[in-house]
Amino acid sequence: MSLGFPSNPQVGDIYALGTQSYIWDGIAWTIYVIGDQTVSTITSGTGTSTIIIGNGSITINSSTVITSSTLQGYVVGLVSAGTDTSVAISESGPVIWNTSTLQTVTDRGTTTTNTITISNNNNSINTTSGALQVVGGAGIGGDAWIGGNIYSNNALTLTTSSVFGQFATGTDIMITANGQGIVYVSNISTLQSVTDRGDSTSNLVRITNTSGSTSTTTGALQVSGGVGIGGDLTVGGNVNIGNGNALTFSDAILDSNSVNINTTATTLIDSYSISLFRSAKYLLQVEQGTGPTAKFSCLELIVLVDNNGFSYPVEYGYIDSGVGVLGDFATDVVDNFVHLYFTSYYEVDTVITLIRTAVTK
Image 1: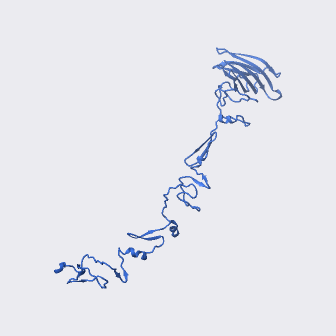
Image 2: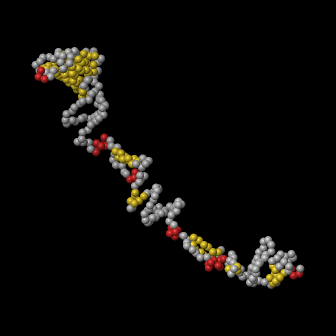
Image 3: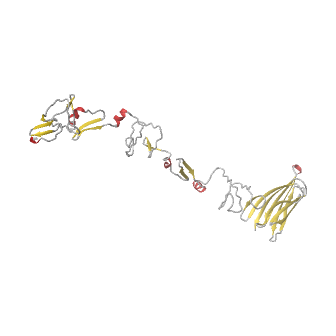
């Protein structure tokens, strides 16, 4: 073929020759007219083909077809920004973005089933600062966990976790708290700290400890210094020596006892250890019977013990109510104890009351 037309063309192939273009219609090359054309069908051969329109536009059913090159020109007139949307033109084409705010979003719906996390970590120092600010009140249906402090009317609100730190310990006070936030305020006074603040009282002081005393460093009450007593002193406690109530000094003991008998048999009425005491003095009172016919006598008895275990009693100062001697007193030593006996002359109710003063070895 002359003029350089392609051999074996396909239907729709276009060949330019000078300023004129030709199109292969399957039989021959016909002049290709560029401009507005009205056709019912455009056929571009078989397989993949490209239709190139150099200038102008394509209209389908009276509507202009928008291409990537014409989109930017048409978008301003064709696309309008709706609620919370903005439209603008850039070099690469139209840009559409969401302009919602928390106000506009909550105007359309104020609830959500999702967890809301505020990752802003601004701290709060008043009602108009912090990551979350609520002008009105806040209603919370569940628990509220606060990592920092809570303030109300500019004052720190105390909780079980913070109340412990608000207490200061004064004199003789200890404050502790357990894991549940319970605060314990304990009085840790001692007798020393209390008497440092005041060593007198108008109240009765009762010592209920029942420890016995055998020396100046034993017993329920121990006084290293002297004792001043403005009234009477009554001793009713027992010690491990003698048989009655005793008041012990550094070198002596004052003891008392009372025995009831109703027999003429010799009866033990008192005893004391010879390992502790060398001598003793008794004041012995004897009462027999009752009423106007009752009989009374009184005497003193001194007892001395040697290192061989023998006792030496001496009676003196005897007196009675005009009825004569009511019985005899005697002593001996048994198992390192001085025993004092009484033998009544009459088989009647007899009460013997004694006071013993014993002197240590």
